[in-house]
Each structure stands twice: as C-alpha cells, then as structure tokens.
Image 1 (tube, rainbow, N blue to C red):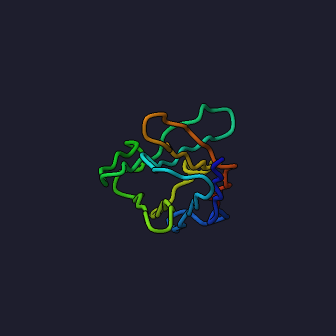
Image 2 (cartoon, helix red, strand yellow):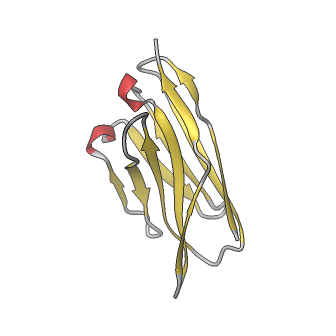
Length: 118
C-alpha cells in the first residue's frame, strides 16, 4: 500500500505565495508521474501540474508562469510552489502519483485547502 500526505495549504491574500508538499510512503517500487489537481466548490477536479520521472512538466494554462512543480526523488516528495495567487486559485488541492512498473497504480492524497482571500 502507498500513502500520500499533503501539507502546506492555508489562507493567503491575493498576490501571496504558498508551497504545497506531498510525501509518498509505503510499498513503493517506482514513482512515475506525480501531479497536483484541484477542485473548487461546484466544479470538477482539474489538473494543475504534472512532473514525470524524467523531469518533464505540464501546467494548466491558468497557472503557467505562476506555479512551479518539482520533485525530490530521494525523499519521494512532490512540491507545488504557488506564487502570485489569485482568488480563482481557491480550491482543495490533491496530490496524485503513479506507482509501479509492469502494473501502474494510481494514488490520491486526502487534499489540502488553499484559500485566497483579502
């Protein structure tokens, strides 16, 4: 079994910054893609950013230039640095990882609340 523990959410004013962390533990053979999703009230969950095992990244258009995803493979941890936060970034942020080799399993964290408010 694999566990994901997220941290770093909170309340921040517009223009502020937050850094989310997601630590992965348990029976890990290989971590492939690691990503962050978010879900705002009344909306569907959407991809924010993803980083693959080789280091390539993809971002939602709405966060390009403001958010940066990174990973520390030695610590099995993925980060999301969020700068210039906007009211529209308010959501629950979920960590997601793909684990395995021949058989790929997908795991989700419990979510961390990010609230951008003046």
